[in-house]
Image (cartoon, rainbow, N blue to C red):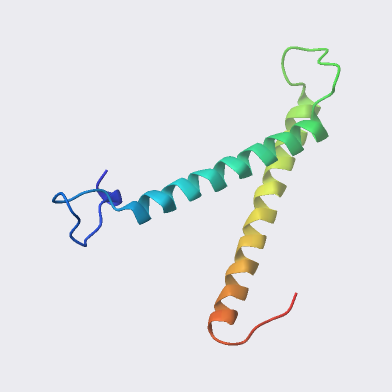
Length: 97
């Protein structure tokens, strides 16, 4: 995995860049957390607790589609807002919550 190797020389002649490993682990943790929260939220909203049928019915399926789309939209908007605030903070224009 060449993306984990750094350009800086490392002891041992080309070892793995630990900063990139940590970033990759953090990103994986973030994506996993997002997925687990989305599944838990949409499951509790859309799936009947009775489990009367082995497959999703049409209403459950439509609910899940809408729920996942909304969850992704909200996540995207929150990410954009955090990035814009981070950019404003970096430029010296702190914006209070």
